[in-house]
Image 1: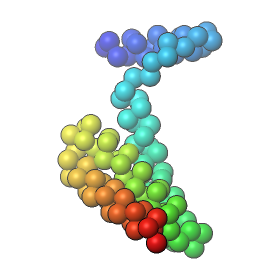
Image 2: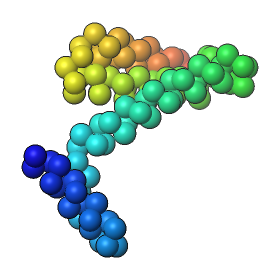
Image 3: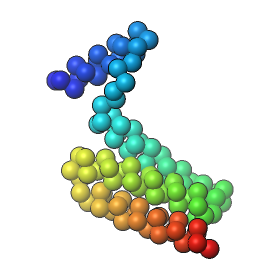
Image 4: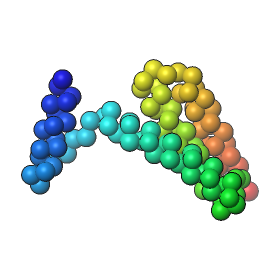
Length: 103
């Protein structure tokens, strides 16, 4: 109940033109999780329609940062299987980014 009260107080301050300067951590995690889902889908769609190369840096960055966002939400919710999958996905993207930058 405390978090809900703080969130409502934060919204009231925002509507009055003031900010408490605090965004609850779980809201940031959720936001990054939604970014992750969007980034992975965007990377897949752009590569599928040949807008970007699946071996290129934009694809790998979208996939890596997206997978990290989903992993963060998964571990936060104690869903370890998708969390582990997305950590591996992130590590693969990091390796591909390093390989691309060294070429």
